[in-house]
Image (cartoon, rainbow, N blue to C red; front, side, top):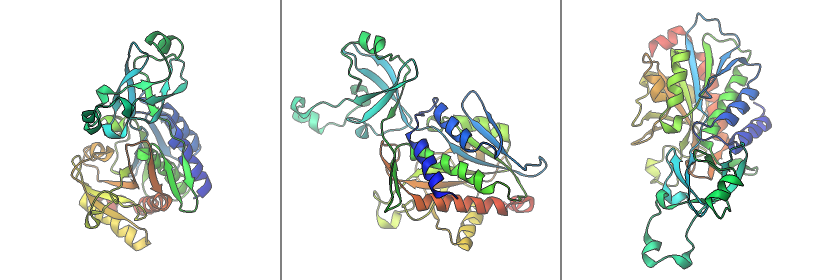
Length: 357
């Protein structure tokens, strides 16, 4: 792995604009990064498939997936005073939204700065100060003073996508990544790096990588990619919410600097226990940090892929502190551990091994 190239890729992906349904920038960055590693196709949903060089067509098919979209907002209407009402795209806690800087796409495709409004404390009643904010009561302010100005001069229309305006930072001494959209741009980068690591290596399986769109609104892209790929087995990269700052020590199952999280269960999937055990054993034998988790919520593309002909599926999640907020932390060592683990797993697979799952 070329560390600096990986960091540069993560930065470009984190900074890219790409809420669900508007993943064009992310798809373009990913496709450029994996050029030459296989046959690349992109469909009208902005799903990207990469059929690895060296696939023979008569071996088990392994799908390696990540999703490209991030949570964000969409303009619902322009108010008479020029502020924008909006809806959330994907799940965001309303308490984390106000007073943040955002980017709103204009009709000509430029992203312009705005602020999610918050009422100054000078105008709050005692009851207001205690009340949790509602998205319906919020607005985005781009500096316009009327609906006409917002539309005419700023070029804003109903349906415009909105993303947090956050610049990626690498904290070199601590090897920490700080930025937006690590759910799942960190998985997107790891997917690209996995293809690079596997390039030219002899395998006993065919590999197809899928960068799936619209995961945050119901795993929609994966419903398309899995039918195109028809996998015999799948590995799903995720940027999973870290829990090491929010639960008691004994419940920490997705802490940073503890390696990727392999999820046994959430409300969308029970992963194949034989394949799960195989992956955890591989991590142990290769000295790669890993952790496992049982979740009472959540969902991911693995749930969709797992239901396609029962393909054994595991989810390899890179811990993300404060996922689905504008600012997230990832430890670079967890990224490297996820990359190394998946590379080792894929190299070890063959038809006989997969049949045992």
